[in-house]
Length: 458
Image (cartoon, rainbow, N blue to C red; front, side):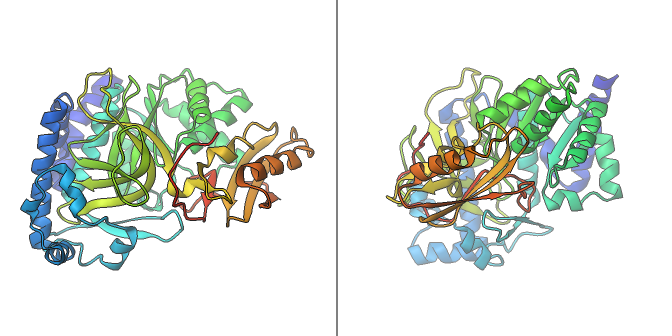
């Protein structure tokens, strides 16, 4: 009976909803199902055709880009290859904040206002058209079907975005009930809240979990401490996104829920960029996004080398995202996935540029270098490292009864050795680590600008 209901939702109810909204989600998803098997050359030709359409529209109807093309003495037709994209400037978050009206197409209508919290707490406000929303929803829908999960299958969403939480009016409640999706707010993770979350998950018996890896891992560890099984619910996949997925989080979620963990990469601003398939390939949604990886000077790096991820979203005629700097650090791959899909791969997503720390000698290293100094110490429940300057780093530390006070100095010394002689390491004991405004948890935050080459230091 459950499979019959899922089929009714995915084939009838959801398509009717999308048609009523004026979205093309269903036809886009059907096209994506076909194009994922195309070879790389055919996908590149599709990208170029869509890029030309976006650039021609932007040059004619978007004041910001009309001025960019005029100032550079370029026409859209001068961008003859994907490599020619570098002729156009990078789009910074500050550019969007200062030019919201000028970045809006003069032909747009019925736009959705959206925003991100921003890694520094300063929100980024922008607009989405129906084209963009349709493509992003279709890309996620295609990816969940890789794991045997369709719209209408029971789903638990652990999320903290104010946009979703404020949208929980009566109409949204009816819609979620029909679609069999349930939202658990990730803002507060007290023991009582976690107990209720676990009860809701057992009652829902979700085919898919969706949410922040930190939140799902926290729920998993709490269930394990309470000796409550969650691996007998028939869950097919835990799809995690919006944060860096750490190996121990993947292990905790997989062990407790008894299902594979699929990493997803994207954002409300940059769109649905990539998703992990059952064979482990992190596939870029190449039909909709062009991904560049650049060094700190803005030059493209070779496959296999880390750099900042820059995205051009091809379904953004209403509010173009062209060469948008995500602030994330990643590595492109030139290999082919064993699944046979022609979609290109992200080899690695190392995190946000603010997840990297800078030693006193200027060496840039991943926050894992400091995380390793804390996470395996017995009795450490939660922690957060905040690099305030080259000379001072704070560690927020929440512990339980198994923590030995003598380990304080060992932790302090390990962090100081990573960052360099003379760095002050201030350790603050807290009952609970406060989450970001979005509900996410970030293990490392650096307020020091990184300008050196990126590398992993373990």
